Length: 285
Image (cartoon, rainbow, N blue to C red; front, side, top):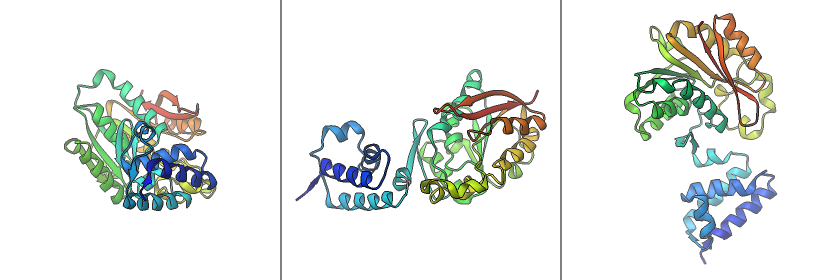
């Protein structure tokens, strides 16, 4: 007898609840809807929809992975960010909603320059979500994605190709500004690793065991990346350019001081959806 969508959703929800998942209903929709390519309305409207034995087996395998602590979007291999879908890999962070605030801050600052051939560099690009979102909104802009990981860069390239942005997208492998000698940019943007090394063992299993350590570990105090970016940005920044970074919720003052020592001034600070300090924008005087 064929199992229906409603039956599978009910089974999923009960299993996730029993497994201690906080929002079992939402995660049921994410995983099942993502695997079957159904939006929420379609899932609600047709609970009697039959699910093939093959799809049921795939969903059961996904459920086991979720109960073992793997995050839903990791299981699906993709996540939406700024209205577009990005493929994930083992070498990339999931692009999260709070990072959209970084993209918004950059776009608002460039509102009057949308028709200029802007140059943007994304340091520690991961999936490329930040840079590619900016390129999609700025039709004449070109961008360089920098990352230490060749796997992350390959993922970013795949995402650029899927979004039709490959002609304005370039990759450079290396540490921060190292592969960018002689280049200047209107925008330097980064969501760097900012978690103190000692804190990483205390993180939730979903982060600790499934996000890449290279993208998490910010050194002893979590600020190593900001020191490197602030020290190198001045030589790479165009005259009217600016630097925009995401930070940890308790790092605003420390990051501002790091950039101030290197001759930058704070133009703007923004909070995330939870009311925590999250984005800072700097320029030269």
